[in-house]
Image 1: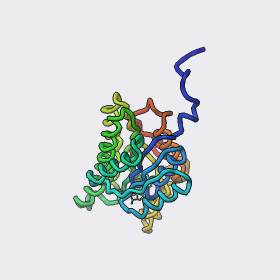
Image 2: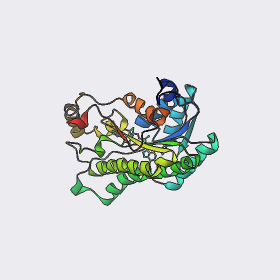
Image 3: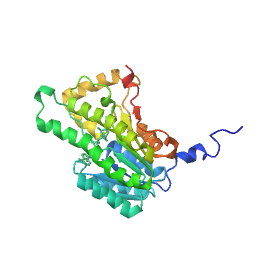
Length: 268
Ligand SMILES: NC(=O)c1ccc[n+]([C@@H]2O[C@H](COP(=O)([O-])OP(=O)(O)OC[C@H]3O[C@@H](n4cnc5c(N)ncnc54)[C@H](O)[C@@H]3O)[C@@H](O)[C@H]2O)c1
């Protein structure tokens, strides 16, 4: 029997990233670090991008120790010219850019009636504007090449409203990332550039550790676990398969998708 499966590479081969090159913003710790390791272990060359140079260098060194081609680059995602220069450096170094992971982001708990314009702008600037600048700079290179995989880190907070903490700016920024992903996906689909996002639930990283330092924060964790069907936070390793899938040929017919990895949180 012959059908349209014939001629495709064996399935695990289609998950491999050999010959692909990419960057991960906010790659210096947490989820971005996990994404950088996952892409590298799957065969890609990875530029680790962070606003804190020492973090990027540490992770690039970890990758090199595993035999992965890696670069440490410093860029603040809120500065479009720095993001553009970062992309140009990757292309100059490796000749191509096939994977762009726009992951840098910050958390914030502020009651809306207390929020200052500066609070609001800072979260939107890093979490949403920064994703656009990264996607635009990568998209320009990928559209010219006729192929590329853009992966944005959104959050379950882009689809649900977390409780009991108040985080309107964060939730709004992540809803923006999901719809930006869908908008760019539609715009670029016919020219070979796929744009998807990953929406983690609560994940054990510094971002969450910082937020739960306060007694109030510590009180919230049991409540988060009660609201999560799986009863636990994600480990960074729980998210690594999603980024490899979206970066690989195995997902080439998927675009504009929000891949939710939240232990079931958004089901209830
Ligand atoms: N941890 C969670 O529970 C969780 C859940 C859902 C989504 N997310 C999202 O995942 C992403 C990563 O979160 P994390 O928990 O790994 O955070 P993290 O704070 O552990 O790491 C974020 C990294 O981004 C870098 N960064 C911050 N601002 C930057 C900027 N302007 N330019 C470049 N780099 C910058 C930081 O230096 C840091 O290395 C964020 O977008 C976050 O919103 C996190």
